[in-house]
Length: 309
Image 1 (cartoon, rainbow, N blue to C red):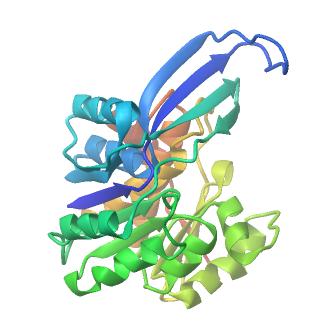
Image 2: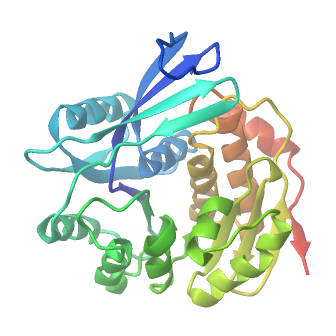
């Protein structure tokens, strides 16, 4: 079982503009889509496509929380929400202009220590052989150590953690030895306070994340595919397949979902990397989270990852 936790779920309102966005005037959309948003939610959508058992956890509040719950009900993915009073889940606006996407993300809800305790109690049912995904921004009012605190509270269960975060939240989580972390280049820069121009320049920083506590680092590189660093000091690279990018939003979450699906199915790390690249690329080439058939078709054409010395 793979449980996904989206601390700050959202209603994602995506609009498509046929003409470039113009400031200080009226812009007309040509297409609109409303979906339940959040990194953990996206990971579960991919896992469902790959027939890996998954349950979505998170906090809901207000009318937007009701919208998120209704959207997830339609997918038939099991959910176990914590409902908070007197707040409202955020609305994230995503403006698509051909291949460019501009995002305006809301601040989201606040959680208390008691709310976190309720979540930890729900997650205590998982143990050896299970995975918990902690993904996205830390809720307002929670400390930067929020993910690390949850991991520490569940350390005795034997569950494996996957963390998709950035900045101080990711640095703190590394101290609790997650099974895998999945930064992109921008998030890698946020951890080390540096600028990285090419994926080759990222190699020493990926190694350093292993030294900081991660068992594996899955570094997504967009069109350049991904790097995978293991605690055995091995590094693999796999390029992304060629295709028309229609939707970069959710592709990194899809990569993590594909990778974890491989691990949960007993595949080795290199095969899990291939599954991650196939899932991430399939979503990038789709209007939304990709179907199983798209992922499988891309997987068939992927070579084995290249091990770097």
